[in-house]
Image 1: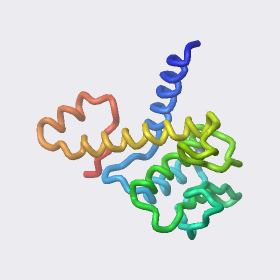
Image 2: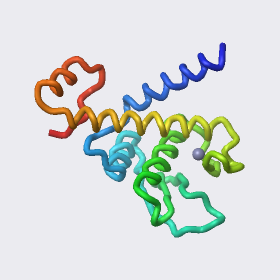
Image 3: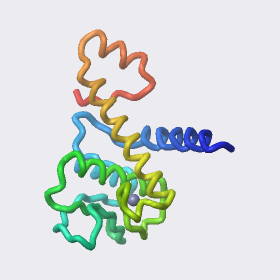
Image 4: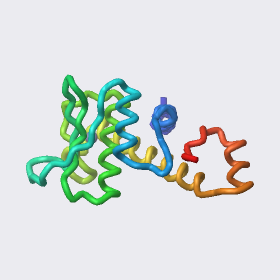
Length: 157
Ligand SMILES: [Zn+2]
């Protein structure tokens, strides 16, 4: 199997996983995590942590009562979304969670699962942007897209 084929196969697997996620427009991170937690049967909560140079900018902690996604207080909305999508990637790709996540360019960003979680995060972000764009299109054009689109309708009415 070629590397290109592996990458395509991984992207296809991600798209299937993303199809099963509770994506709603307008997209809201805490509502998404709450619904994903319900779907998985384990609460998934977003918590803020104080900045600490010894800790990553985000991390996922699993306990018997739920999964807690910690993000450094003051993180911009865009970066927060990316951290959340990366950690959700680890969860749904069923990666072992005893890990320290890094960012590209840092020494932790060496292993394959980190690269996969990053790729997943970008694909999920792209899907959400597409859903947001689709919901902005109203009138006959929007109805036409809904009728012929292969994706389910995400827009809240
Ligand atoms: Zn990671």
